[in-house]
Image 1 (cartoon, rainbow, N blue to C red):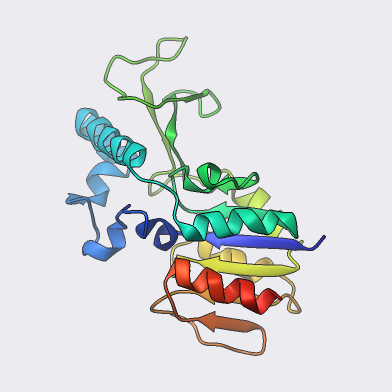
Image 2 (image 1 turned 90 degrees about the vertical axis):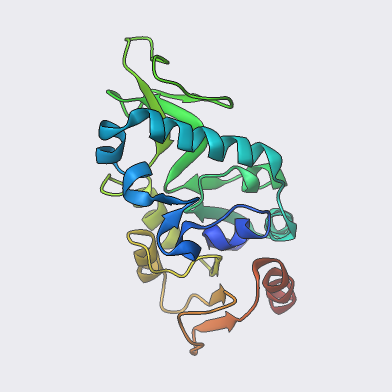
Length: 224
């Protein structure tokens, strides 16, 4: 069974109704990302940050996976599929994908502010005063700007084993995720689905200029 490695970003969830902050001049749901997605922002105004992610969590409960998520899940019947996503939603899992690595954390988890490994599932609101067993405030389990990306080494190892690489819903402009493409073999075919692609087709790269849902239909046809 061939290893199909899939790199996904905000574009695959956009068709489910989850906004991408890059679409709005660096604002994320009307907020400067430096206020709501940095350790400094959390230190300055923790209530604002907690409320921001509470709203994102509520939104996540209201949306559903789309055809692109379900199409990726169906490929597990024929390939060993590993999804490496920059998304913090759980739409891949809800569509049935069984092997998902979240580079930037997960919205439905929280962790201790003092112990990065003390992680819990969390589906409701997170408030000041919600603490871990040792009495430390809990925070969203999100990799904020300026923080280490703990899953990047594992993701590099997986990319090195890829027989096929699919990139969908990400412009491959945000590092370190953008660098993962450098770890595949020069013989590994790459498929890039994006309505406004930032790269061009080459002998190795096939660009599919389309949305995630329509692009997945084309990709599955190309695999046959």
